[in-house]
Image 1 (cartoon, rainbow, N blue to C red):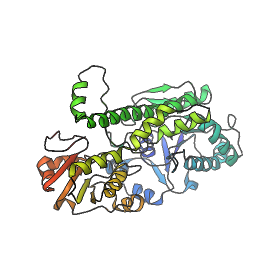
Image 2: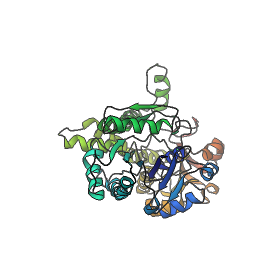
Image 3: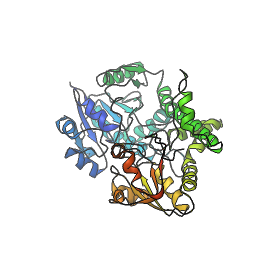
Image 4: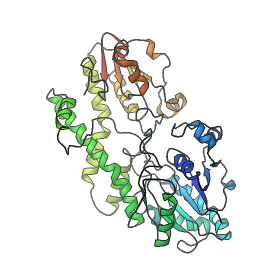
Length: 420
């Protein structure tokens, strides 16, 4: 009997995984976003993770109707796990996906299968077994550990990264019993040449995911804090970092805005669980506080650099990182709002962001003709390749005679540009 896999959620994480699995396993992909499904069926991936030719030639079977999914051996849940307005974990999407999978399980069991549900969504330790398992049992009428089994394999997708792709990275795997772990490891070993690492437990695998990103968040927060300190001393943090990097064990982090769906979110999951078990996550939340206040800090510094007579500003780039179209949790949105609070008329340009998504979800209208105008302040906020290809002189030409060009990530290392 040939194995079947269903991937639930076809975003940044699910689509690359499903396409990789479909090379030698019958794989079905499901997403609740009908527009997303139509685009994928037409060969277009709005996340730019899978090119059109590869998507069209893939054996992956895509549907927006859960009823089309077959009885499968593996159900892999790769849905988003965001935070709410109070920075608490929002598990509603993963809970909904668990219910959907639960409703599919009776048919799989009736077909003689012992289905394994694998979670890749970022969660805090305990969610898979303590929250999702009961939901699946209630939706299916089946018993965990008898009729179906659980695994966890944290996603490690880095949007826009063409080096650390799903088929090359080490995949952490876990299972609720040794036989489950063997099956989960065997499945992912078929996907990646990087091999699998067998975590001691599902909770250990869940914890590994959240600390990977919390560690980066804290390191970036340290650099952001010293950026503020050195700014008070009229020291360029970039000059300091250039010198410090000559030490063999110095970690090469840079100052910046920490957004996106991982580094800016995962620490709150860990902090939430820490408080539940009675610990004050002081270091984790201190790092978050520093990084969350960087847009306001940058806006103040930019306003000061532009001078009291500056009236217009151009922000180049709105997505959360360079060369990706993802606007989720982009801190550039906060930067724009802060600049406007300094009485600057701000125009925003981004060649990759979807204008409709920017307006509906960020409240920002993207300009189409900004690159043909001049501004008192030009801020290279997200160094997309298109902006780098323009060159320093072209960026300078966007500024008025007394205008200032700011290069937030020091991409050009140009003495004429303002940097942190």
